[in-house]
Length: 443
Image 1 (cartoon, rainbow, N blue to C red):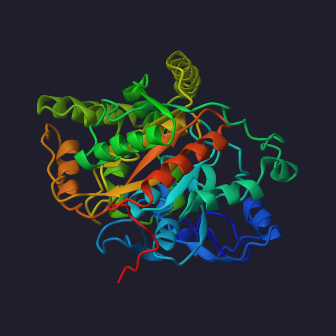
Image 2 (image 1 turned 90 degrees about the vertical axis):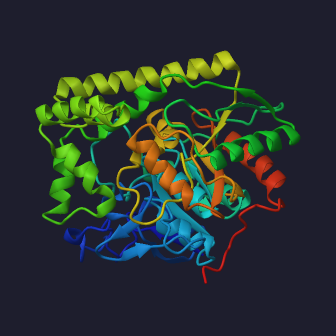
């Protein structure tokens, strides 16, 4: 039994992305991934909810299907945009799910609901039939991937949906086998805090506990400092907003943006001069991150967009060189800066996704493994210099008992190595007293 994210085509059912303008337009055929699943004997239970436009990282709500709550805490979001898939897995509604990921959209919901997810390398799975909001935007691409409650089930999905089996149905999928797993102990670089936004105390503890668990499992860990962290975040926002939100506005067709996206939408539509003026004013009040976000957003010329694409390619090369110098096979770190967010509190906290969006920009496979739950002595953030940190503090105050997870990122087409490390980690933490076991009864 498998569920399919609402934005992925299932024949006879609309793929609306939570937009009223797309209601009543059933898909003519299954997406390639859905077709292959059916050929392998999967039973499609139905489709799972998404946030309107797929662009909200913390909440899953839209005017067509309503709001999805986190099974661990009614009133908290399950993350987005594959929040419905994650919630269905966490409460036992489904066994495995198909999601998509352009900025953590598989990994963030998995982390916030205590399940597992994997974002493959681009085109490891076919994306034909995945209806993203920004067709033609190729600087940062959305990628279909699997979600489940165990590494074993993720491995099952990756086995049956091989690149070789999808290549005849999609020319972008290379007819190749996965890169082999190194025949030696894995070397894992550990990032507890990347310097852009310090994660919650609970999230940092989860990373430390995961590093210790991997050491017990025979891996070698070392501290790692990823390059170009802040630049990668601003390049991400600059790239996806290069059309000045014209594609978003056309898709909305007059519909109001959901609350979690309204502020970002207003900022993105401001004239360039107004954004610059607002950025200067905010800097005078001590803000640092939001002014840079304002400067990154907005319409770009073709020349500027091409420059962003070229720099993106350089960042991919520089990241690979940094991994080579450090001698790491994988990098372990946070998924999101905080645990799950209370519904209604996410509008000005998109920047908490810096840990996941990096691997979309760099096109690296990355998986999420649940590790622990938030303790009652981990609810206070000591450093709140700007509005982003203040929002993080407010989210953390409401996080007791929520799931905690970590992210393991690998080298291009190194899904098998990522899954191997995920399995080692899962085996070490699954029987722990604070492990967020699923399925959980939301009642």
